[in-house]
Image (cartoon, rainbow, N blue to C red):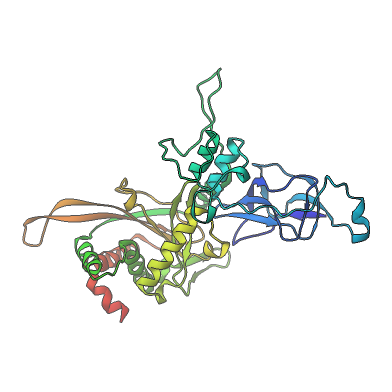
Length: 392
């Protein structure tokens, strides 16, 4: 019987076959993971639909396949009275579950390391990158190794050429496909603004002194929710064929996380009804899951607006971010830098300034509306106490 790639998420059309978790001839049990696949949003495992024997792989590792494709062939488990004819060389087993991120598994695969033999030094026995590197050096201790090697393990150049290549598949290929589709479909327009965050930094420090830790990113998300309530056109989806713009009922804000395998966007649902503390806890949890490759499809779908907070990377003063289709807008917050500014009294003062870029779908909104949106966002951030009025 055929085991197929089913639709594991919203809008999914294809996935990359990362690697098989079983071999031809293995006898597996129902719900046992058979193959790991990668979409543009997450890594997932396809389980066995029933107990049986793996007969044949119909696709190859590294191949990108559309939804509905047959991944492998299985034969149903033989009845008790006939199972005696199965040679002892073929045994029913339950595969050991390995705690490791997709990127760590990738390092192991590309260096021919059997990850089941690696000793994990992380929490709960999780295998981290350093454990694999230790194993490659012949060291199997349980203490993390302090290494200076780059995490990107690139193939060695051949003797004939100095050209290096890295694989273009998995999440990287899926992201490329989605970004290309977004740019082909949406007429992007990007609007820039600078915001004085001096008062917000003071407010943040004041809260911290009272043992309340709220990150600036959380305040940005809550301020955006206020703006989306006043400008719902940016919390919408365009249906061109039906000739309508669907205004979304909730503010499901995606937070772009820069992982080792590429950008992934988990979603904080119904931000408009959550407190800053709730947003803080959820954002932290989703970020950790994204970095560990443990997000579920439920946690990455349903977004209505995306935030990219590249400020902590300390390397960006502006960008033209690509919209996360089918959303219609995205805001990126860039690094904060102290600069001399002229105040209302014509005095030169030092202020902490941050640049913001907003990309929006020019089919559903105009530049004037985008300016009003970022002006409102600027006012909320520059005068953080004004948020209290919005939360009452």
